[in-house]
Length: 492
Image 1 (cartoon, helix red, strand yellow):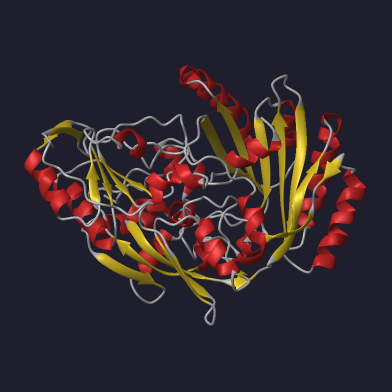
Image 2 (cartoon, rainbow, N blue to C red):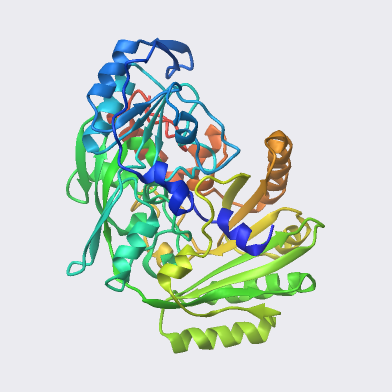
């Protein structure tokens, strides 16, 4: 795996944009005929098999502006694919929604029939939360679009949009907001889980820049949430994940950015690994807010481990060039391609195919500092590891101000690996989990958008916000309909 390939699985939450293969996922939702629909076996919230009558499925389909896709439809196998090839699940129904009314009907149908429900935005949940076996998948891929208000520096974004949609429209006015590191990430999952990006040290997380949202809760009610309207739900969706409903529209705060940033990758020899890690540990915590750094260590097929530093400076170019000279002088990269680039192009650099032909395992946790012990562990760990610099504006928000509690400085430590053959899934996943077991002792908590954790770990991860989140969950989703996520269990 080279640096470009590793970037595609590092710090992103959605499939990449590719014009032809994206068409089935991004096209207008059109209603399909359901005359041939028969009774369907499905899975309920208790995990038991139940029967969905043909009449109920037809009634649902007839009530939609979008469409219902079942196993009898020719595009079923295409529709059930998500980006990660490791996830191979077969839902009973896929409801491709054309608007908020369709989302309400799908939520109501799932609740009334007590069916397992997954919500697919960008389709890039590493753990596969956006697809389920035997349940209903609420597919937002046809619900996309962006409206920028340059005067108020804000943007309304449909819930199924990708961050590249927002990046492009906002950059027409030299504006942007923190939105992930790959242009095809879905805005929904990214924002609800927190949302790191190249602008986060300067302007905070994606969820910190959320002004308001339209949220459909488990009772199928459309609620506008903001600091003044349904404030408890607004607090909860900023870091609490998809536990509280389906967002059909986001309203984001925008900031002056670009149109160019100083960005690129510094490449080193394998013999420089320790020196680069040690300098990164010293240099990164004192970096200015305009600078985003990401150190990756990538193993090739022979186990040779190569370090790279991704550099992105979103401030004054002269200041960025001075920092770059200092970093080059201290670490002496063999090569680098850092230069002034259009921000939109930088956001697109890690893009790959919409539906990958490779399986991917990735997980991440927080570390306060890059200690000598952690440096040694990274050097000797055969997996592909990245260290994303945090701090800056991320730490300006108090842990209890939003549901997202991990506000300290330090780094986000990520482990990623990928492979080709499905027959390798269990072995390679076990190897990756073994690697993470050796690295996770250095971490405190994890990033929910990249979790493969068990329920106890998920409960602990919300820290001081857990009790409040459980109470809000009880009030708005006491039956835990929205459970395909880093799940918050309703309070007793």
